[in-house]
Image (cartoon, rainbow, N blue to C red; front, side, top):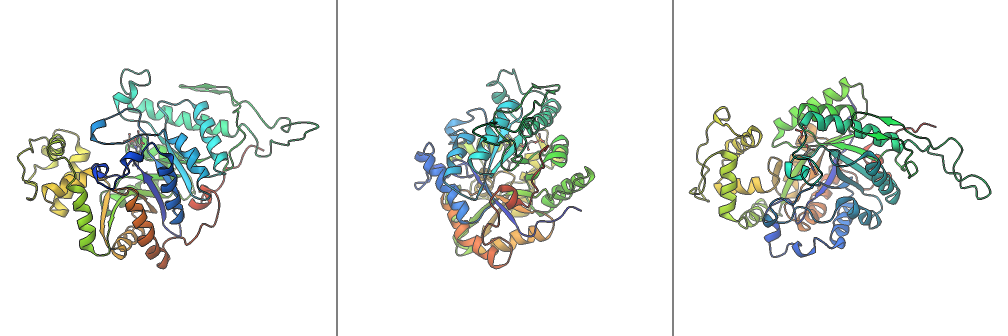
Length: 436
Ligand SMILES: Cc1cc2nc3c(=O)[nH]c(=O)nc-3n(C[C@H](O)[C@H](O)[C@H](O)COP(=O)(O)O)c2cc1C
């Protein structure tokens, strides 16, 4: 078995005004500040005050449902350059698509950011999902899944080769002689199915050797890529049994790939915290009540394959047919059945659960109750940490850092201060040796 981290890893997943789809409608929301880099810098500083491992950006390449609120605004790598300068220790992880980028661009951007941040970058490699994204990049539709995963693996190989095209000690800065040690910067001569890259890179080897590689795939191919290559994994798990099943599967695949790296696994986590449980539930309800009813019921109708427009909002969800009888996409329907079965929600509560994090885990309660549940997942093989998905930003990350983090620290479950300076240090990952 691979080594377990000695404490939780925590990551702030930054998304617009928060992960609740209606968060931007709240009177206190930062909806008018999404183009203001100071907003993201402040979020990163808050996460750093809480000693979190990293902040994380997802990324998409299409303006989907723009009237439903903000998803994307600033391009993530550009924003991270500024956030790197506004912080000193926290890691910075960005999603970069292997379907739309080319290795030279990706290697150069991430290497530059690793230098700018002095060793705090991570790359969440995704293969992207939607045809509307593909049509912004010269494709007719999204290329097939297998093709995308083959390209992703080749992309990782070529990018890492480019990072290794400079030896760690290449720079000699001899003002009377050489700038680099002779022979220390080499071509990579990558010739693959998808890319031809001569190299070398235009940027010296990154401070971490390689920025940390994250992956979040759920399919067979996604899990295999994670097992072979990922150094840390983001996951989706609605409850502990689902988390345990994913966790043990990935750890088994990592071991089968002959790797001994810890590969921390961090499921997404939506937290509503209050000084009492009632206050936390009121907070959740206040956001749920901001959801536009007609369009949310229409969307739910699409998920469950029936007309929900007449469903009473504050009544329990009517009985739903079993998974085997459902003809549409199984994943989300399965999650809805699970939510209905375990939580017995009203229609409004179900809409709220789906509007905040979708199939990710939700915890509601006092700081102690949240810490209890996190510890329970951690002790029972469900998670090595969590990818925090605050329903509304900045308020819910402020509350988490001020009230939940101290409880985790008192219980010895989370660091009181950073021990190292790089993202690799925070995650307990070794620095890959270069070629010299
Ligand atoms: C926390 C998290 C963040 C993700 N971020 C993105 C993203 O920004 N862009 C994207 O295209 N896919 C993103 N994904 C999707 C996955 O990387 C992956 O494409 C998806 O889970 C489907 O995987 P599969 O094709 O292996 O089933 C994310 C997944 C998770 C769990």
